[in-house]
Image (cartoon, rainbow, N blue to C red; front, side, top):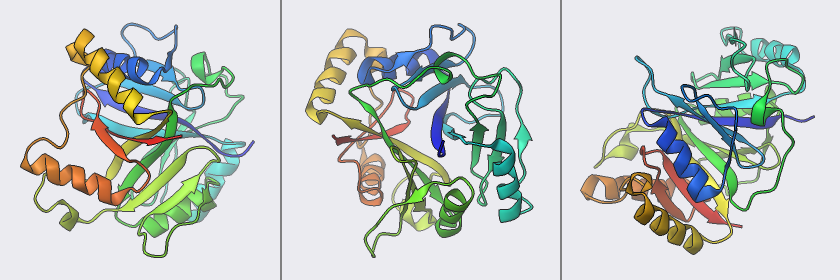
Length: 268
């Protein structure tokens, strides 16, 4: 089994509301075993989502991602060989989507799992299914994109994809989802609020952007709490929207979820 992007995780004060948004707009399947006081877990048929309740000391937002690998022990050896200062931490058995957590050379953390781990359950133990709206990519802004891209290619086994010579991003894929590694420079945020390095946005592939917009309008009318947060409204937010358009060429329509996590859409 080649490496597979296993899950994406969001930290939110309104984790139940966030889960309803993705379920309503993108048709994700929610785990029936999600406890009422625990994370909301759901899937688009390929990759899992965890919307975790925000706890003291943890910032809200798009927080981390995880991989399925063939052999966790071998992967840990590769991490140490790439850089002995990159450490790996064993996780509590309550996490059905991760056995270990590690970090890349710029400190971006990720989880590791494999198919036969005993703590896998719920949507992470089910087979794949087909959905109409699915995760296409996610993006990370980081200080040293070339070294970080080399780490995910050499250690995790993601495959680099072709890019134009003038494109500063790096694109790696597990065969279905693309990881976009973008350079972070403070000067990119002239005229808007500065966002620290880290995960930037989630991209969905949809059958029709117009259909998604119509669904959002209908859903927002039915339940205003599920309306996307305003993005591109006001002087600084317009600058941030233009930065989103300029930095990732995959998405053609940009919005934010109710908690402000950035999303872009492309058509199948």
